[in-house]
Image (cartoon, rainbow, N blue to C red; front, side, top):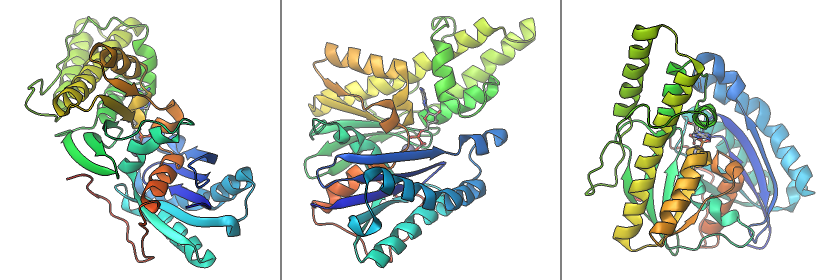
Length: 341
Ligand code: KG4
Ligand code: ZN
């Protein structure tokens, strides 16, 4: 595709719009996080998310076009996430995109949210990592390992059997009274903590599976916090920092060891990280360190492209459009859209 593409993302609690040119250069990438609207409830409230998307999206699209110096008529394609995600939230972005595409008479394409996370790395100015690669997507709703071959042929290797990695961060943060969402604050507090103080479990160390499990870890954190409360009353700042450091270590160990295992077993010596949890400082540094030890090239996108954004949706849309794919305007949102098997 030689023209410009508008991409929209509204699958969860970020309203986002981006404009890319046909070569994948990001001309604008605007994200409005709804975190403050959901924080009082300790998690995403689907109804609030849909209403906020509805209120924000038109302004965001206009801002993204303005920043790119374009008018709607300059667009050759419109893309939006059509799953997985919250049904009402997906509906807002998808219907908006389809309506715009119809009005402009341009191509429309629906994008899989996780394909967006997997391809965020390709937005790099140098073109990013080329397939084949192993992709780790770790976010608030998903934790999975994929094998990505040329032609965007994606195979699911393993996934979480219960909580997502981001959910483990968020639920632990809630328990520690650190607010919502918890990944970034735990990451910060962990920097000042002792990661050897609590021996939290790393589940499914079994080398025969690429699956993850984080629900046992959540229970172990709760038991450790309850014991501290029984023994000494409130937790001190140091206690909280130590829990954060120990828990971050356990989550990162699970994610990195399975990723390295997948690279070694499949003989694909390239690893790409994606998803909000890939903004974690320890995950970023450990993946690179362990990659070096194992002769694996590790690619970690900038933090802003790890958390939900529309530029990554644009990257996936361009990749699919270049294969001649597009969607009819009858495409419906799919809250639990599978990827790669
Ligand atoms: O990809 P994302 O923005 O949204 C989903 O698709 O879920 O990911 C959000 C998740 C949240 O669980 C948040 O706590 C986590 O990413 N997160 C982090 C960090 N920054 C965001 N987790 C660990 N360390 C961080 N620095
Ligand atoms: Zn996401």
